[in-house]
Image (cartoon, rainbow, N blue to C red; front, side, top):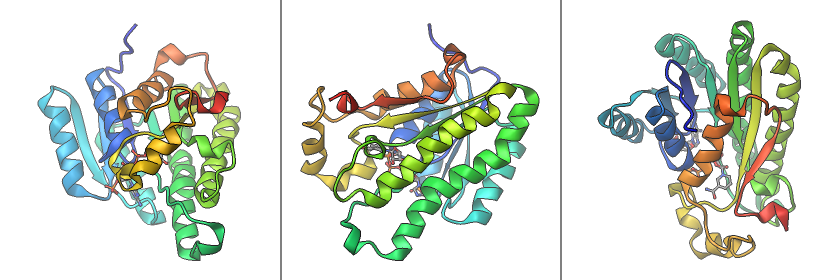
Length: 248
Ligand code: NAP
């Protein structure tokens, strides 16, 4: 069964690139009005143009999620453009890898601002209205390294582990009001963001049963499923879309 999002508005953070852009495309293909967001206006316009030229509905909202004022503005603008926000995909993320001894404080703060603080305040701004309407879906994008220890992933992994716990907390907080909150935990996936990792991305993929790097559309499929009414009974899960890495 193909999920139908006709009449729904979806805000997808970090949808100027990679996994988020593919989520935006898949949601728009299924009828959603997609609000594409990121810092890069040129990539945002290209994403919107691609969706519109395939007959979909999309608008771009520029936002820097490291800036709390910009996060608030994003929520306000999303409601202005969409009328309401029915689906929120907290996908934007920073994933620098470095030994703990070498992490500058500024980098720690920026990763936590984008990966934890921004989703927190977007949910604060948007989930209560979903709860009042008795309907909404939130999908957070985490990572397999939020579940197991990987040297070099202290800041990144711990920030996404916070987002995984927030997923469960929000499911408990908003679930009774009809708002479902879930997460997808991707494994190594080929995107613009991982291009600089070169062969180490393929090296990570060899640790998965699937034994290959994932594709953005494969991760997006999991996110779109959790955002859909097909997942009506599913609250507070973290769905691994990682070639089986968390199974072994
Ligand atoms: P990507 O290609 O680097 O895309 C990241 C997106 O986040 C871009 O659209 C970027 O937009 C946006 N973004 C980054 N910083 C931002 C900021 N300060 N304000 C607003 N937007 C910002 O990344 P990806 O590989 O698709 O990853 C997407 C998500 O999946 C991330 O949360 C990542 O942690 C997670 N993930 C990825 C992998 C993987 O192997 N690719 C594995 C596990 C988890 P602008 O540049 O336009 O600002």
